[in-house]
Image 1: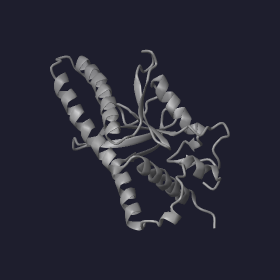
Image 2: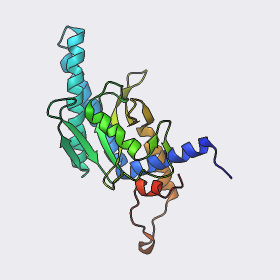
Image 3: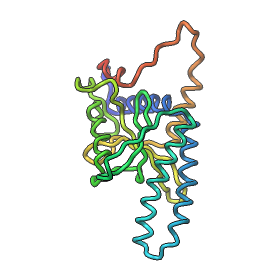
Image 4: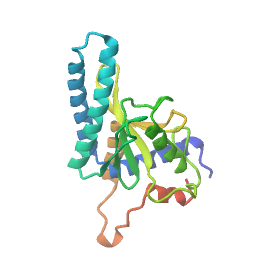
Length: 225
């Protein structure tokens, strides 16, 4: 029986989140959210000394980016996740950090979404998602990953804080597309829910049943997504 589009999207979202939470543990994600909230509150308090709203807004934007990137770096070190520094020599983005796992690159973003006016490195990260067969929409895989994809290429995700109507800040993740819009957006609560379901449904395997780690790229290459 053919799957309806909604069933396919639900399966793809679930698969993506399962791989994400297997690479970035709930302890890592909770620590990152707490660290970002603390640093942002400090930055906001510091920038309140500027009377001009435009000056205060610009200073806060810079500080949030520096604080967010630094928080990502520190939490990665605490959880033994590689986090590498890159530079664009001060042009179109300057220095930036990428946390890397088997499946993903995770970059901090001031905004939980990508605008169409964004820096060069953000466009490159978004482009890597289409190379790895992610399409525009909620979350859409092509039948197979394009042949140009290399084993070291990873799906790119940005992370930031989003303020809700009550003023609380929540960790939000965005899977960017080169056109400037989201392929998919998800929250910490979504990842915790998936993780809890995995923990409640899986029993510890015997040593002779333990499978080698399979990447999301490999699953898509099978052509059944």
